[in-house]
Length: 433
Image (cartoon, rainbow, N blue to C red; front, side):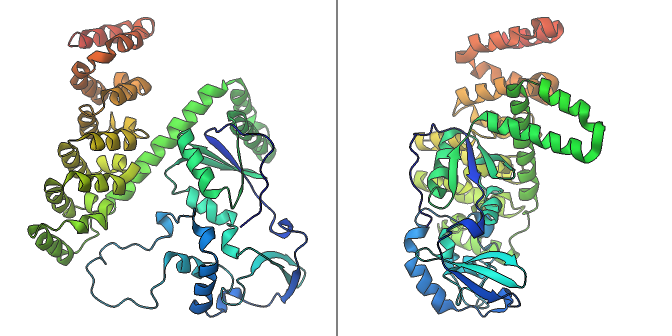
């Protein structure tokens, strides 16, 4: 674990965290250097499970706040009912992590890979900390791609800038990684300056053809540019996740489905918690999951929400997952379910408003949290007024937004000057309230 002294000033949490990229050869200048022949191929060493297990026992404390993302877990789809013996040793997630490291775990557990100088490989010997405790920046970057708390990240020369959905997410990330990385909270100025720097580098590469774009960046108000970039990124991520889940429609074999049905007839629904997301989006398995949801207790439905997490939104917009989520909402009856719905639909639920499939789930959310739906309408009012589907959804939901009538009328009034015909049409719709 990296020894870090506390900052003399108290940082104000923000939605932006700066990760300083450390030089491996300068992590600890007082540590002993060991010279090793550069001809050694670190990939060819035999994996020593016993030595790794001993190391893991000594590193247990280092893993208290460290969690592997789904991207580094072995997929279990369609193997949940497979009785065939597994090939090779069964390793824990911690042991599995060492297999993917580019050095020999059994011989080099106390070393950290350094830089290549001439014909000699320099390795820094660590006196009190294991290799795994000081996370490699590349490993962190791979995790950021799949971290649901992260809205966007940018790599600069000295820092990795990570932008989060909310302060709660940034604080959670800080608590998870502050022992291993040099972290600090940043401001929107850091993010904006990065964009300007990137534009400048393009100017150097391709000459005067980018001058016009540079001027546009400088003349744009920071807040307006930032909002536009955020919305574009989030919407792209939402659409990418839909495409990903649509590709999982055939994860389970006929044998798998038959065993699920047998368990379901016996009242056993535990199988749903093993591969919840894959079951929800399957062309056949979604029907099995819907039947399981219908006989589940309130506590079991809580587990379903916890397993789906924020992916409940893109799953709601998939061809088969939409039916699963609508059934889940129909059988959600208590305050706990209501809280889960408000929490997990908060980040990307707005994109369901004018989505061909997702809009049906969007309308169902209304009965659980009308304030949340109202916020979605206001933040995406362009989707309402510029698309036929958005207008249709707005008409269906308007009579349930009576508590927000005054604020909604103020929003509609903004269009009186911009487009009077549209303003008249919206006024006509609000008469139903």
